[in-house]
Image (cartoon, rainbow, N blue to C red; front, side):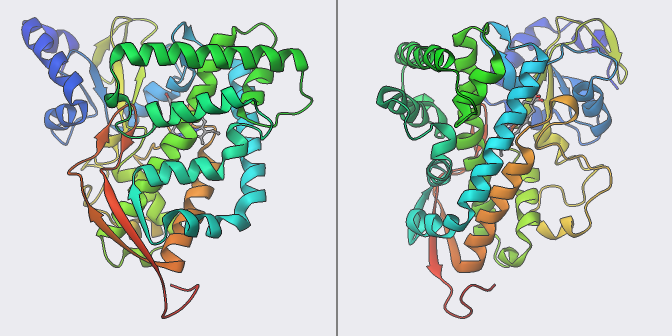
Length: 395
Ligand code: HEM
């Protein structure tokens, strides 16, 4: 294990160069640095990269209280949205609302898949737009004002879909963001004054969980986190599952749960989480302090050769006997692990079951690699779905 003093000493120039290359393509950068054995290391970018499951649990579990207590989800421009009780309330409320919607809408899923994906669909956008359609009433209740509805649709088009941000200049993104925040803040004030008895959509969940004094701008940011998690992350995870099954003939026969888990292992949509140490301490042999940026890289954890057999291959069958204490953190770990994990898995499994049971799937790849943004999105590809004529409804 490298000591932090030893690693940092004498290479400030490399650190600056490293930081620039890290920003350009962090996934390739960290992948090239990883030697396949380490728990963690101080990257030439200057950041600390954590990949071994023990160190991951130490950082994300934060049992010793040595890291600033928050998840990336509740990070706002002003710092951390809080207090913690409000975060927990909001997470629970969102999960309950989604579960109700998924239960009520389950029977309509096969029809939605048919409408949206048959015969040809272009991915990854097709996955995002399908999830948006299915969760439309969870994102915004049907009676939401038109300007708000337009603003949320525009956020999906301009910021959630893969590559959308790159199509706009920084200045245009800034102006757009200001406009969206204004519309959201106006609605948040109106809903606060109206005091709904029970939440009808995620914005209600955020407003009621945030309490009467939370700044509307902070609540708007938390609402946007939900928009990215649902339409963005769930849509991308579906895209990976479809892409992998479509490019690995025979795997469509595997259990949908195994397919989803294996897709999330190989291509974890939430591929990097960041934490700040709250004080100087020793992390698995490396000295860290409050100035350090600590990155947990689930992408490398999930491909760690000491913890996975054939780590770079798509093998859904490995989940027939899941590892007891896995190096598997697609939804994080510890107190801040994903509040939406169980509902997300249920929805993804339902969708994968419909796609692999009712249809023959073929995939033509158009892009070369993943699309790397705050989330790890699949490359562009085209999927063709045709009815199974041999055994309708069966696999
Ligand atoms: C494929 C889809 C999703 C993935 C991969 C994902 C992943 C994650 C990860 C890795 C974290 C922990 C982040 C950290 O520790 O910094 C997290 C937190 C969170 N997620 Fe998700 N998520 C997904 C979908 C959702 C959905 C649909 C919801 C809405 C119900 C949701 C709500 C949350 C919340 C509220 C937190 C913060 C938990 C806390 O700090 O207490 N996520 N998610």
